Structures are given as structure tokens and as C-alpha cells.
Length: 257
Image (cartoon, rainbow, N blue to C red):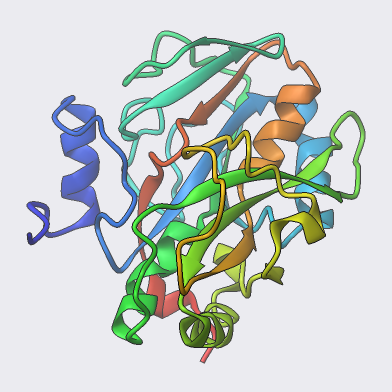
């Protein structure tokens, strides 16, 4: 079924009007999607250092000025308070609510960080003939990240089950997308990286891989969200997993040749 929205701007306006509240996975192909983390200015420096030290998981696409709701580079004219399908509001490390509009919680001291998402390269994979996994899991691992200030923790990954031959193509192709996590960090047995398949952050528990498929794992932009959550910030606003911010950037325009 073709997308009802011809441009990213049209899709965001549909979210602003409350017409689109569902996931963005496999939606709006060709446009760069991002994870959102908005946090108080006093914590923003350490958070940005954490992202710089863990760039595979935290590739920064845009940063707003304190209090600004417009990601002027990635989506001029957009409003980060309204232009995502669904948000999560965290207070002191606990999720308070999951609204479709964040205006009630936005503050003048918030800095918003847009972090590239692997949802961006699903369309290039499809064009390359890769048979896409019908589901995408988000999993905790035992791999450590490099800490910065109050931010630390384990790496979070996304998992797609692909045919072995497609895993090779996916590795080669996604290496061209460093702003969207780049090449996979692991292929094969989840236990080799301590991936928690029994208790996914997103997706149903996994008992065994589909027949004829192998697990392909990419660093995930939920990693910095989890680090900020563990830091128990007084306020943090994020996207709801699977509900990315759709930018005006074209995936094929910001990838490496």
C-alpha cells in the first residue's frame, strides 16, 4: 500500500493533528528517521559527551538550542512537541505517561537531541533485495558503553532476523549509513553479546530464531535513552520506541558513497 503522505512534512503535520499515532517502522521510506531525547540544559553537556563516546549507538543528527522546539537542520519549521506520533515522559527515572502531544511537559531549559535510527536504512535494504524481517526487536546486552558524567550503562541493540546471504548484503550496505548506526556489530548467537531475548524492550520474547534466518544486531539509539533514564533525570522527553521523528533529510543524500 503506498504511503498517504508524499513528504515528511505532511507526515509530521498528520501527527500534529493527531491523525497518525502509530509506529513509523517501515513507514515513509527514504526519509531519515530519528530518536528523540529532550533533557535539561544542565545535563546536556555530559549527555552529548556520552553520545560522542558511543557514536555507533548515538549518532547525532541535530541538536536544538535550549528551549527551542525546532530542529532547524533536520526539519526546518517542525515542532518537536507535537510532530511525533507518540512520546514518553519520564520524571525522576520513572515513566509518567505516553502522550501523543508533549506541549504540557516542555520547558524553556530543555535541549532536544535527535539521534539517527536504523529504521532509516530499511528502504535501502529492500531496494538491494534484502528480505526484511517482519519484526524488529530492541534488546538489552551485556556490552558496556563508555560513561560520561552521570550517564553510563549497557549497550542496547536492534535485532532483525535475515537470510544468511542477506546478512552479508546488509552488512555491506548499512556500513554506508554511519548517521543511522552503520554496519551491524554482531551476527549470530545472541548470547555472544549477552542479548536478553527473553525480555525484549520491544517485541515478543524469542525462544528460537526463525528457520533459515540468522540474527543481525545493530547498535540502537535507545542506548542513550536508557542511560538518561538510569541517571534519573528530573525530566526527560523521548519518542515512544518504534515511533521515530521523520526528518526532511533524505537517507540516500547523507549516506557515504
